[in-house]
Every structure is written in C-alpha cells, then in structure tokens.
Length: 187
Ligand code: S3P
Image (cartoon, helix red, strand yellow):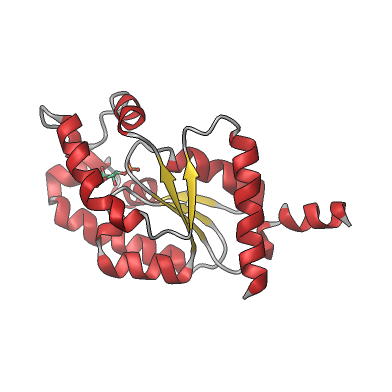
C-alpha cells in the first residue's frame, strides 16, 4: 500500500493542474522548481528563460531595448500560456504576480507555492548575478526592501509556502508534494 502511494506521488502526471512558484528574485524559485519537476516527473520552465529564448537576448537587454512595460506584457502572456498547458512546474519572475490578472489566474488555476526567503539570503544570491535590471541602481538593498513590502501581501496568498532556508530540503519538498497531492484528491 505504502509503495503504491509512493508510486502515485512520484508521478506528477497524476496532478491535474500546474505547479507555480512565486516569490522574490533570488528566493530559490528556479532551484526548487527544478527539484519539484524532477521529483514529480513534470517538465520544468522558468518564465525568464522562456522569455529570453523568445527574444533572443537577456532580461536586462529586453529592459534596455524595449522597456519594462514590454517585458511585463510578454511575462503575463508567458505565464498565461503555461497555465493552459496542464501539469508542469513553472517558476515565475519576482514581479509577475504584480499583474492582478496574472495573480488571479495563478491562484485559481495552479498549485501556487510562495518560495520565501529573508532579505539577507536574497541579497547574497542576487549579488552573484547581474541579470536583474531592477537592482542595477546603487541601493539594491533599499530597492529589495521596498519591493518586498509591496509584493509580500500578494505572495502570502499562495496556497503553499516553501521556506527556502529550511535545513532538510528533501523532507520539506516531500511534505509539500504530499499536501499538493491530497489537495487535488479532495477536489
Ligand atoms: C524581476 C525578477 C526577475 C526578472 C526581472 C524582474 C522582478 O526574475 O523577471 O529581472 O521584478 O522581481 P527572478 O525573480 O527569477 O529573478
């Protein structure tokens, strides 16, 4: 019985909806998204990477050439498109949920997971990567603090939370998968 249960859990295709990771840049959405995709046997997508592949250039270059508004437009379409594809795992860019239509669709049509990280963790992670145009100014810490204040009330509405600094990542992920699976089977 136990083995049967485990087998079902290892097949993400038993899920009916996508799994969408939301949260601040540098929180670990891509890292956990990849792990979840592998564990659930589902394809993993990172919306920034999808957009970069479509545009043929980096997120920073998209901001420079066409502006943030254009990026947000393509980002909203990218998330909407992936939500319509059935079970998969999608990591969204940190600002994607600031579009109210995107937020509504993600909360209604997916298993939404807020990947939660503290400011210190976020700062140390983003400092290793230059592809974050919003932090290009001279006060990335202050910018992050402002963004967290604005965005957290939206992230908090996610159905699940994943503490990105949890020590036993494997255990946390298994618990999360069990919760997602049981939520689907209650519906
Ligand atoms: C952004 C986050 C980035 C990327 C863009 C804007 C944001 O994605 O979409 O630089 O507004 O927080 P990550 O959250 O994957 O870093």
